[in-house]
Image (cartoon, rainbow, N blue to C red; front, side, top):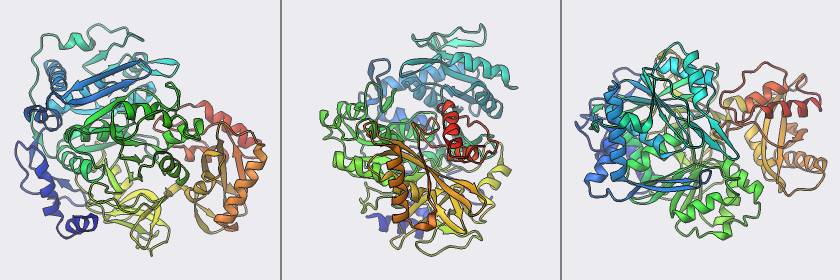
Length: 629
């Protein structure tokens, strides 16, 4: 069946559709039904089933005779290390660590925080928790002590598993002092910590609390898989909240398994044994869904990459990894490719590698600008699929289901909603708008399996954040539109739709125009306060490294481009050339923080910011044109 038939089959009988997808999972007790709606608008899926995530991701492949297949390829240019770990080896490693956790009192339902760099042991730790029914919460390695402390107090973990350090290009970041500081700050104290000692920066261990990774596993019995109920939390993943306090997204076990299993073939078009690479980090949802769980659930080989798109050692790293490990499907954030394009605009590194095994490139995590999509497509000759989802959903809301049917690509659109998602564009009063009109993007309840059923210990906040604005819908926080063909267009976060003299304008649409200029490698547009018009757009331009023209010329050209392509209504007259943009570690541009600086408003330093010094640089540049007072 093609996309339209599959989507229609879900619409007509969601219960039958999801029960059919559940056949791909090994159940200890099969679910009697898919949807449990007795507590609407809080919904749950496959609640009465019993199942184990680790069994489905590891053991069953070994039992099926595929234990010699590589489960994980570890490629670390920062340590000059490459290693293959088979499914049989992974099973032994996970069972042994799970046994060590169990021997120290970790039981089903207990929380374990994981604070690790991009090494295979991070996946081992996640799977070991899943094996015994413990609920893991991965915190991005290197997060500041106070932010880690907030998560310790919210999740109240029995144990913390950490690396001694992470490795960045040109520097080693010690994690243990940050961990010690966080535990000191936190009200809740873990019973014990397990520390993976790395030779680049071995950590001092606190006697009685800290245990070395190998030593804690010596002499313990490997643990078997513990079945848990379908609604049991597989993990908690903290995402930044608008109030500054992190929100603990809960991922339910059974729906997580069913949904991720469906996506690997139908969206990413990979089969068991294929090599799948998501260039992200285990600290983010992409790392959970598409480095660890989904590829292993479906018997793929997943790549754990410890490096950067540039500087480890050059802008050819992505191509080298894809070529060397015969990657079939590649998934990353647009910002990674913008970094590559800025260093190597002509794609000279690409020509050095054989990418014949690569079928397609997938982009997500932020809006994919047309210029970047076209650059990748023209360079590689491969399909480039933008797709849209959130930490809260855990997998694709709208995408191009290439494994079902590769739909025509409309550059700038993530294509169409996936089965399970009834996506609507609403006005401020909650009424659907006509095709082509900008509005708030909302999803009719219930959300599909695997999406968040609530926030950890915060049901009232869950309702307020996602359900109360548009009753009967999940509020995505994004703004956009649908066209006549049903394609979705994500234009901006709701907060990034600016009001210029009564006209609602998308900063994302302006960014597309700026990004289309031949000298612009990356850009951002924010709304700044204006007495006359309410708000005005301000653009920030990062230029390609080889540009040597006067910046004033380029600024004039991009202002003219916006006037020509969007019109005078945009009132686009402010643009600055800057060296870099403030981003989270996952590559999202901190537009809200930039707008607060421009308007002279107070702001909280984002916990996820990659380099706080960038904010001072931007403030100086804004002050030079009369803003950020």
